[in-house]
Image (cartoon, rainbow, N blue to C red):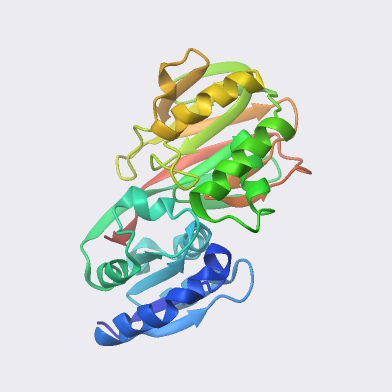
Length: 304
């Protein structure tokens, strides 16, 4: 393995259970030449470590964690000019691991680490989000506005469940505790519509939340982003739709719109919670009412 590989490990991933795999992963890495390790110590640290690695001449940055860790690393790498941007490797040891699933990285951490070091590179798209306060972030897999963001917020409060069951319980909490559908105007480069919107999911990959197929037609390297919008519906109807979203069959319902775009604007009549790749971008105290979302095609080389 190249000595120019940086390994960024989030020991807190999967509610701290990532520690259980560290010895196995360390042994696998050592068998293939070793690498320089760095552990994250605070929120946002992975972004700083990834940018530093790029500026220090590392060829590859490998994230060992969940979707939040990859999200931070992507933001660090995207601040680097494309001609100096390292390749991205990922080892899924988090709760959802949706980015890895969507780009074709093995769920087996030992296989994933080998591919992160020596696998074929796949160029994938990256999205941007900018709000009415001027804040901008990059994201690699999903943005969720409204219902899905509430799910992410509630999932952070769950301590006794992990992975898919944790997200499903958070979904049920959201149905009964935060069932808001503000009027939204949604305008893309392909269409414009206005409706009370319970959920607006914007996806680069088809899967989020540990296995919900929110945008079943999304492909992370096709030069376009996808959305799924669910209009204001009753709690009972939302309970009916949840298993459909799990299977990716919700698009057959008249209350659901699916579409594709390269640029999208959202204007909400009231502040909206938002998550980006499962990370809380705007919580229940949000003052965000407007968003602009764009795509950066083929922005990252990912080892798969």
